[in-house]
Length: 339
Image 1 (cartoon, helix red, strand yellow):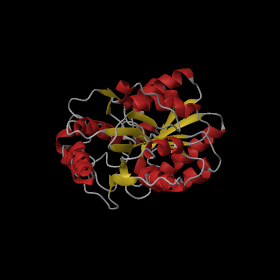
Image 2: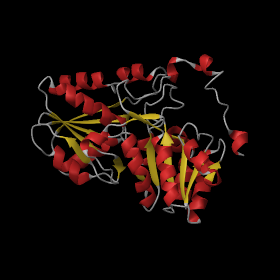
Image 3: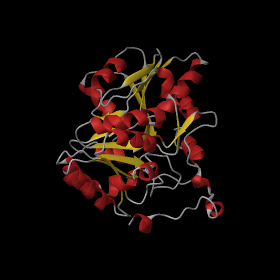
Image 4: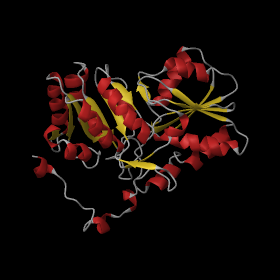
């Protein structure tokens, strides 16, 4: 079955005709330190210690970095073909037998196609299935068919489901064993390929359910998750040259949210609170944080940097990130206009 459903390797002879602007899919800047396939490498390391760990995918091993695991543990790798609902149902069955399945696909396919199977077969039964999904938000130029701009909004309302949006390669490496140790289903937005390393300079350690302040500042508080933490950290450094002092609170766990830390940071007077996320402005981290602040009586100046409530264009990622406000330059321009 694995060979039958494996996509042809177009990296050599077919590469030339596929080099369109939409193929530019790296989130790393030229000067960034990166690590290759941090999810796959971390899962291989975990599997050496945990024989119950298995890897599963719906025809996307190469494109979710699960091919690294498949090569190391072929007898613990399951290629389910182009059948995301089958993938989730089979993962539930393996979890019932005591395994810890890591199921990978694209975020759009898990959230749109397989939602009911995740809800009924996995989440309702609180099974130990870990779902890691590539191409979250605006991390591909292929347009609405592949851009999971609403996955957090779709999954936040699902009971029992823990949701993680890691920032960089280091956090992915730390999140994988934490997911395995966590009892119950987990959905992780996955950055794949060459992933930047950012958090090593902040003495960072990932913990499910915990937000971490990375830098402090008196004028702006960025509350961010995923790749936008990379962007706001760079923006904060550059804003400092304009004598604008910015703090960064990284929130890698979207659910359960670290409400106490968010309230403590946003409750400090005199700062503009800006939630920055690689997700639609509807239903993601921004609205979750806004709800927390309202329920706790925090009357902060509040703004959101997020994707619009729209189907996005196809094209090269740098162009799209500028167009939709996710680039460092766009973040700086937006924040300066708000101050």
